[in-house]
Length: 295
Image (cartoon, rainbow, N blue to C red; front, side, top):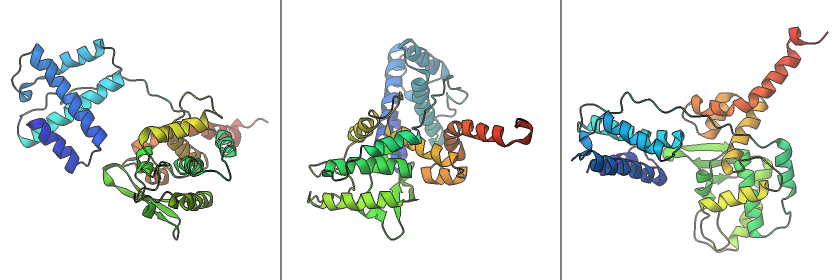
C-alpha cells in the first residue's frame, strides 16, 4: 500500500519521530476516507486538486484553525511528492497549493527577573524529585534543548571533562552544548541521589520509581515552577527554549552560534527568536546614534 511505503520512507530515510509518523498517517487516511465516500474514488493515486480543495473546505467548516489545516495539507503534499518520485503518479495534485494565511504566534520569553525568582524556589537540601525538577529547569534554560531531547538524555551524554552535554536532536542529529558551572554542580548533586534508585535504565532523568520521565511530567514540572513567578499566558518548556535564545541574542551572541546551539538546520528557523531582541536593539540604537541623542 502506498501509504505504508511512504511512512517507511519517512521512518528510515527521513528519520521522522513516531509522533510525526502517526500524525502523517492519520491525516492522509482521514483525507482518503472522506473523498472515497464523497467522490467514490478507487485509488488514492486518482486524486486531483478538486478533491483536495473539497477536503480543505470541509476542514474549515469543522472549525479547524488554519495552522492545523496547513499541517494536514503539508502531510498530504509530502505524500504525493513521494508518489511522484516513485512513479506512481505523473504530477503532484498539490504542486501549486498555497498554504492558508495564519497569524504568527508571538512567544513572550521569561524575563531574567522571573528566572531569578524561580531559582529562589529551589530547595537547597531537597529530595530526589526536587533536585531532579530543579535540574530540568536548569538544563532547559541554560542549553536551550527541546523537551524531547531532554527526555532522551543518557547518563553518558554528560562529559564532565569537557563540560559539555551531547544532545540527540531531530532526525538523530547529534550536537554538543557547553555546560555552565551551576549546571554541572546540579548534575553531580542529582546523580548522587539517582544512584539510590538502583535503576538499570540509561536515561539521565527518571521518575522516583526508577523509570524514564515522560512528556507530560516535564511540562508539569516547568509550569509548576513558573506558575509561582509569572503571569505570562504560555509557561512551557518551549518558552524556556525561546528564552534561552532570546537572552543570548540580547547579550550580543552571533545568530549562527545560536542556530548551532538550538540544533536548527537553517537560519530561517532561528530568526523567529530574534523579534524579542529587536526592542533592546532599538533601545540601544536610539541611545547610541548621534543624530538621535538629545542636545
